[in-house]
Image (cartoon, rainbow, N blue to C red):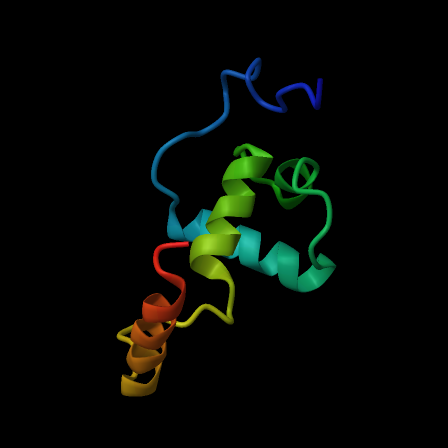
Length: 89
């Protein structure tokens, strides 16, 4: 059950590291059109990538609200406190 794979049968899809040009295409498309169907996005944005690859690139690296860098003292204290209460859940 479920969906059929979106890109298993397409051998021309690019795999491997993303280029800055591909990142720019993805970011500019999302800024202009917003988030929608990840399966349709690569073709509409002019990318030769799988929709899943685009979704993961956006979610994990390109979103503007991703916080980078070290934890603050308050965040570190909160993590330790929650871990002592909840454990490794």
